Each structure stands twice: as structure tokens, then as C-alpha cells.
Image 1 (cartoon, one colour):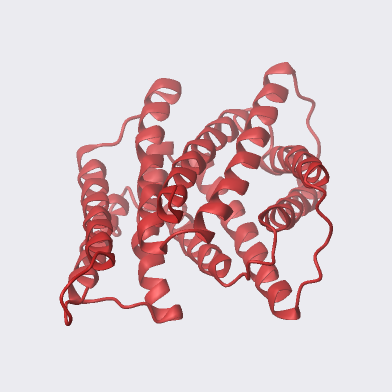
Image 2 (image 1 turned 90 degrees about the horizontal axis):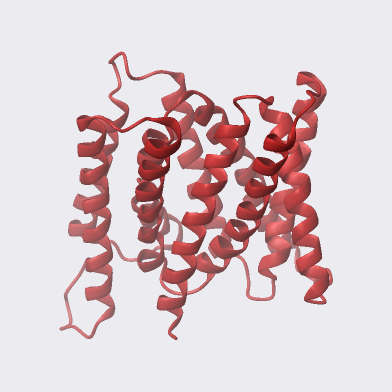
Length: 295
């Protein structure tokens, strides 16, 4: 199996896991405070990740200062993405927020060009611009449908872009499990800090099952997204985030009775088509081609 194919499969698994996690969290925060849910989920996820690390015989690697700095940056971005995304999720339909997140592959591709100097021609730049116009159709600034929760959704996108680009800076000496553990512990710490302000609320078997399901899906998502972003070409792997939109629409309709309106679907379709064009262009650029052909 090639690195590119492995990365694509891992990204698909990660998107399903994260969407199920989001669904569980949206359900449980209907009856539990947000930071209580974050701290409980984070505690379970951290324990599971530590168990995985122990089973792998993982010890703290002797990493250089540069790797620890990148892990710190990535972890901070993970915390910012978690709090902004889950806060927005409390107040937005699952599919609408997921539609905003579909701009991630385009922005990661743009960020890789700006940060890493990856080649980016006029065709992919045009696709990125078109995709961003699609995002504007989804959030509709200046209309009644645009509010602070939409802004939080956009901030969470920016944080995830930073997280994914930081992941690419990690050396191969850094175990993926260690990166996931750092992120999980930091998010758990955030939840405990918020819990001190919100207070504890008793919960029943339903809430416990949802928290457990969210934690399991989060562990799977943490591990697979880190591995996906570390293998294969970033322009090929990142667009497979679009699978999350299909799951979000289906689960939002089935569990919450919400379905995106026409403008949201149109905007999401534009974003997805722009991303797929970028994917196809990347594949063409990685195939043997005459000299002088550019993206």
C-alpha cells in the first residue's frame, strides 16, 4: 500500500470518528454543561491513549527542542480548535458547522504553499478562491443567519489549519501516540478549568454512554488524523476531510431533525467541488508530465 493510499484511508476513518464524536457531544451537552462533558471525555480519552502507549512500550522519546516546540504549538491549536468548535456546535446545526469546516483542505493546501513553499499555480489558487466564495454562501455575512457562532466556526477552522501544518513539521522520531496524548491532556485540562467555573451536574446512564462513545471516537480520530497528515502528500490526503460533511448531514437529519437549506448546500457543494478539483490537479502534478507544466 502506498503512503498516499494509506493517508487517504486514515483520513476517511478519522472523519467518521470525529463526526460521531461531534454527534455524541452535541447530544450530551443538551443536558450536561459543556466543560463537564469536555473534561469527562478528555479524561477517558487520555486514559485510553496512555493505555495504547503502554501497550506499544512507548517511552518519552529524547526529542529535540524543536520537536517539543512544534508539539506545544500543535497542542495549543488543538485546544483552541476544541473550545471554539464545541461552543459553536452547541448553537449551530451539525451539518452547517461541518459545511464551514469543508474549507479546511483548501486552506491547508494554501497554508502549505505559504509556509512550506509547496508549488501552487493559478488553477489551484482559483479553486481556493472559488471555495472561499462557497464558504461565504454558507455563513452569509450581513444576513440574519450570520452570528457570533459562525465566527467561532471560522476561528476553529483557522486553529485546525495551524494544527495540521504544525503536524507536518514533526520529525519522524516523534511517535504519533505521544502527539495525541499531549493534545488530549491539554484539552482535558481546559475542561477541568472550565468545570471549576461551571460546576458539576449529576448525570445518568445516557450521558455516561454518550461520553464514553465520544471518548472512544476521539481516540480513534486523534490517532488516525495524526498518522494521515504524516504520510503521503498533504494535497492528496487533506481533501478526504469532505467525507465528514456527508456523515454530518445524515446524522444531523436522523438525530436532530435538521437539514441544510439550499444556499448552505450550494455553498458546501462549491467548496467540495473546488477541493476535488485541487485533488485531481495534485494527482496530475504528481504524475509524469512535460517540463514547464505548473499547478
